[in-house]
Amino acid sequence: DIQMTQSPSSLSASVGDRVTITCRASQGISNSLAWYQQKPGKAPKLLLSAASRLESGVPSRFSGSGSGTDYTLTISSLQPEDSATYYCQQYYSTAQTFGQGTKVEIQ
Amino acid sequence: EEQLVESGGGLVKPGGSLRLSCAASRFTFSSYGMNWVRQAPGKGLEWVSSISSSSSHIYYADSVKGRFTISRDNAKNSLYLQMNSLRAEDTAVYYCARDEGYSSYWGQGTLVTVSS
Image 1 (cartoon, rainbow over the protein chains, first blue to last red):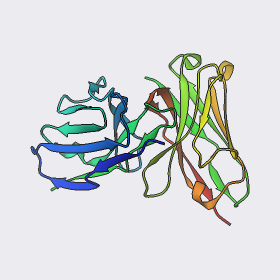
Image 2 (spheres, helix red, strand yellow):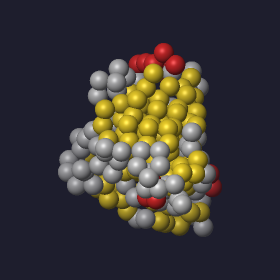
Image 3 (cartoon, rainbow over the protein chains, first blue to last red):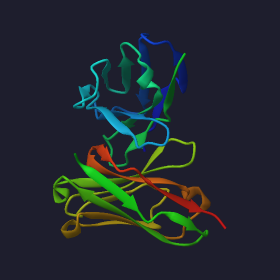
Image 4 (cartoon, rainbow over the protein chains, first blue to last red):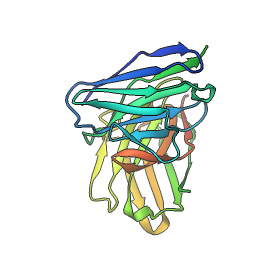
């Protein structure tokens, strides 16, 4: 199976900060990467697919980039409602795998 | 907006069985593959199983292969997960999700607790 390594596992930042989360795959995944946001007690919500395609209704402060094995999720100006856990997921393989998650807290 | 509603979770003893259901509405269910994804308490997300729109392609995580069976009934807009030989480590919230490679829409989840 393709392993997804996400970093950091947690971070604390202030409102307005630029935040970056990285995800590394154990092999190339050809941009078959999605990012999800999950708030406590709620189902995950799809933010981006194909590494950089923003889903409808998702604020433009969220963006994704990367290629090959290395991908990033960037929040350009952190807002209070962005407090959540973020997961990457590869769907290059039929055995989909998720990163371990990054918990984002607002200082 | 697309809607997915899971049901069938509950408390079951180790070695027992449970069948989860997922009712889909507000989209053409028969046109999409579907996923089951689970989340153990306080842990991350784990893909469990996928089924294509016509049931012709089915995949399982190694952790559930041989114990869980995914199926669907397009006439009833429903997805199922038959879980047998349950173990304590299967305790989790189980989500159904619409498959587009990634999981585009998710249900609210149903909790399965395996404990004696």
